[in-house]
Length: 332
Image 1 (cartoon, rainbow, N blue to C red):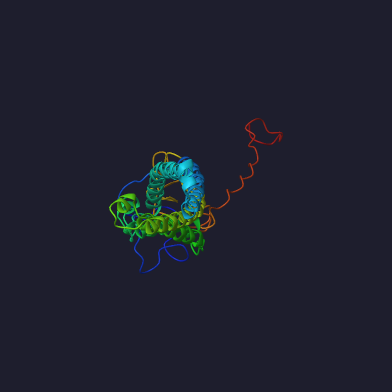
Image 2 (cartoon, rainbow, N blue to C red):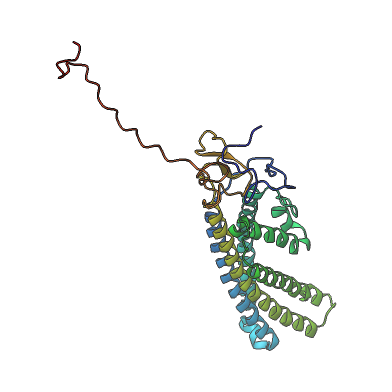
């Protein structure tokens, strides 16, 4: 099989000794799907969850203050019961909000992961299925999704696709995951430490121990909810950042409707519906100096001789007179 027209045989940007050519390509065509709609839905739901978390923290601080200095008048007036109801309502709303936000977030997370496979093929660290399954394994869900998120962030950055590009730092990603993990574990710990009314009724704990556990559990739980508020805000920033990077990366792709299992390479033989080039290695520019993923052909002098300007038209020759000559001595 011959070398496609315009393909450099060697030198800068061409095939280098020791490197396989053509580069490996994904084994299946994977469409690049937009993230903006899902990203907006995730951000709205996370904002709602953050607001509910603030209310939940207020409810827990309020109940802890009442229980810590509870008097008979508080019990008779129903203030303590109202405080319990406030905590229960906010807890239920928080659970519903987290369920809705979690479902949409995992869908966005999985789609973002699939898009990176369209550009680079399967990851060497985690397969695409872990973008969903990793969230549902107890304890491991504090490790596996972070590994997948790290891979998504790195592969979504357009600088990663540029020769010599310098990908953006991952400080935002790290802060989000650390605060989210600490807040979640702290919230679970506060619920586990709180004594129940059944233990009090059965005589397993004293009234003083029960009151102390409720006060401590509410205060720790309120702090955990405030940490989760910060985690939700950082998650919104992460979603927006990854979505923006992928949108920028998609701007380097073929027009909408084309499949991005591999990038178009300039100079390769044309394919139906793909003007100017076929498909080459994923993530390779069409030609030096051309926009990344451009369908434009190679510049003059790259992979062949530069096109020569058209020759100037030749001057017309003198007209030939086929009629009568003015020379009287000429033969008739």
